[in-house]
Length: 238
Image (cartoon, rainbow, N blue to C red; front, side):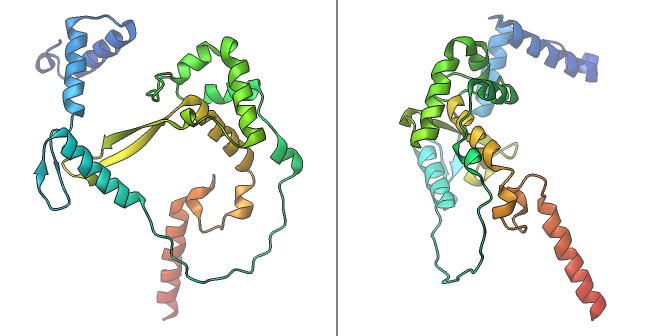
């Protein structure tokens, strides 16, 4: 490993290039194993604080603390505010749109838009595998997705997901310091992306303009700017 103190910033660049080269060439060297062990130690959760501020260190206790926190965070109660809306909206989605089913060419283009080397789902297959094996698996994948569009169902195995916790800080020791992400199976992503592709052009007709984060081309900052302008107008009028 290069000595960073001797080479300064160039040493850091050379070290990262060396790591990248080792991963690409897949050489099972001592340097490669040390990089893997270092990353594993960095990603390990040694301890965590529960809701009472107590430190827990056993894997089972850490898992229970995280499950309790995220279950409470993502479980919401539905409140009926007894409000009614009198909004009429004519259907703007045509039959051609609702009945369209993706073909193998469309699915392949969706695959090419995904990140190839992203972390795989529970089946261990990433996007790069599907692209490389597409000539042999495209018929089966296309048929499975067509069956979903026709029947509205797919095998439960496709919904298998790995939940991974990404630290928000350099030294996370609290459940709120982690951000959960889902690693979904590629076919599940294909179904989701094909549905989004068919609905995104019509969402502005059904989602209120105040929901800026839900529509492509709208920005959350737009609402902030509007509030600032309203407050500024009130101050001028007073």
